[in-house]
Image (cartoon, rainbow, N blue to C red; front, side, top):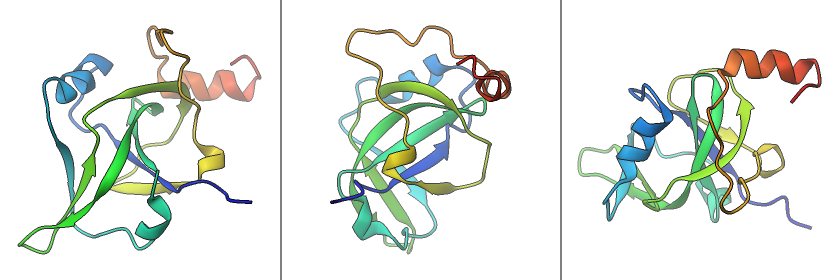
Length: 133
């Protein structure tokens, strides 16, 4: 039995709203995240995604296509140029990226379902602790 792919989480730095994140993906044949180091567990990420965090909540994901070293020694995390909404889940802010096990990854929203307004992560976390979401 497999545990599924390993994923990454990353803050959608600079995005003031979910619409800002969507604009990053508009009309892009390629999207790459620039990072200093290649993840040590890169072999476990085949079929994985980069999950985007906005306002202390995971809100979407982009499938990872691969990793590419740049001439300057830094790395690109190459992503499919699409954004897939997921069921919002609280996630504390962090610098850089972090690993996310497949079992802990939020599921995609059903086809055609709009996530609506995303609750602020802190509020989402409190409601989740109370069992209300």
